[in-house]
Structure formats: C-alpha cells, structure tokens
Amino acid sequence: MWKLATAGVTALFVTASPLAYAQTAASAATPSASEWNSLTDMRIDVVKAALKLTPDQEKYWPAVEDAIRARAKDRQARFADIQKRVGELRDGNPVEMLRDRDAVDFLQRRADALAQRSADLKKLAAAWQPLYKTLTPDQKQRMAFLTLYVLHEVRNAAEERTEDEED
Image 1 (cartoon, rainbow, N blue to C red):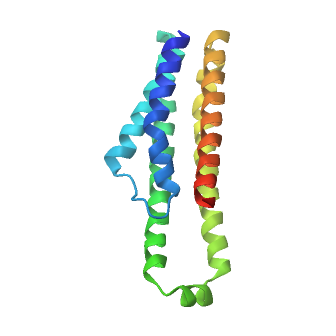
Image 2 (image 1 turned 90 degrees about the horizontal axis):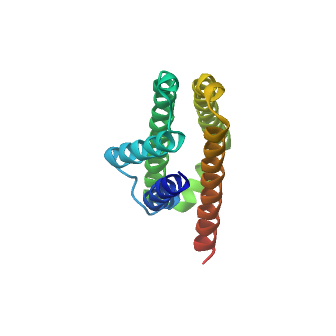
C-alpha cells in the first residue's frame, strides 16, 4: 500500500518538478496545454490510487475530480498571463518600464489572482468535504501522507529555485 503511494507520488514529482521550475523561471517556456493536462491527470490518478475508494465513496469522486481540473485550468491561465506579461516586459526598454510602472494596477492584478485562487480552493474544499467524511482512518492517513509529501516537495523546489536565482 505505501509502496504504491510512494511510487505514485515519486512519479508525480519527477514529472512535476521540471514543470514547476519552468513556471517560475523567467526564461523558460510555458508548458503546453497537453503537458498541463497530462500533469493534472497524473495528480488525479495518484490521489485516487492512494485512497483506494470503495464503491460507495466513488460517487463523491467526480465532484472532486472536476474541482481539481477547474483549479488546474485556472492555474494554467494564470501562468499563461504571467508568461505573456513577462514577454511584453522583456521586449520593452527597462528604463521606460520602471518609469511607467503602475503599482496600483499591479496590486489589482495580484488581488484578482489571489481571489481566483481562493475561490478555486473553496470549491475544492467543498468538493472534498462529502468524500472526506466517508474516508476510513487508513485512507485519511494516506491522504495526510500525500499532503505532507507534496508540501515538502514544493518547499524543496522553492528553495532550489531561490538558490539557483542567487547563483
């Protein structure tokens, strides 16, 4: 059981780590829609495989999967917008960019992005709630393990990016 979860999570992060780095590196290209979809499919498959849902629990899964996909789609759109803006800024004159920078517009864009992320997380939590209530203690433990592992990997990737940027 743990071997399956560990193998699935490892596969997820082996494929996700380069994409996560590409999302934040200014010179990296944005992953294609098919790459985003593939990554989302893998994440969904890993979670579902780790939980080993019973037939009674399966009826709650479509709402969770839809919320995961909607969140991934919105994340993809945010990254595409960022990539577009970075491209526009890269093409411009640095002095003019600093002079013409609109701090209020930046704050508005940031607030909109955070509001979208918040709404997506609320939808995801609402979708998970009925299923989570039916999970056995063992399933909850596997879910907690996946969550902690993901958070650990995200933190490590962020630290690596920071170190790379400092070099």
